[in-house]
Length: 262
Image (cartoon, rainbow, N blue to C red; front, side):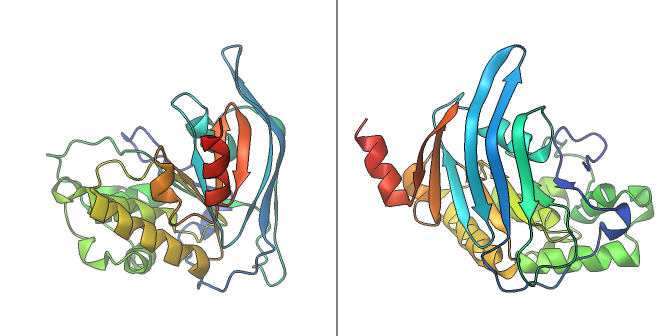
């Protein structure tokens, strides 16, 4: 896990050797066969059952919206996929035909919020330097990290933000920077924990459009946590309705119908 000093949440979670940290692979068309295979997953925290008997697959090129009431275990499920909490059951990654030779799962993660002092002189470039961890941030970006930062920011239409102070960014700009960080290295699985935080309706629509474009370009599965099923239904291929157990799963219209029947 890569956690910048002084920041409360990880920006990304990478299960690959350190020497591949800043390599950004060229996007390729989704094969539809790469999948994260979860079976009978359960989580207990402080003796309480938080998640129970979850089984599902996450396929490359698909956006899965994870919805449910407060306390349903949505963020805990992301933490379980990240390996941050002990689980029962299994979680395995299977690469499909034409997939890069890397065999271990690479996860990109965008947290709900990033806690930092908005008055601090920390720039977007500094944040990339911190997450790369190759040298102290005050020494600036190495050529390798700068190239990776430029590439990732360009993918989210944010190359012009590299030298901007974090405290000067709008909510939408900050979300794009965090999304760019999650793309280095190219993930198999992208986890977005309520990205609507701090965004107005127009900004959220643009963010969802960006994620929909990236999921195919990077051949990745996307899990998007939200409280607003109607909003995510416009971009999601599938919806999981979670309340400790997986109560409904399928196309958005089908899940909406099931939920409405209860």
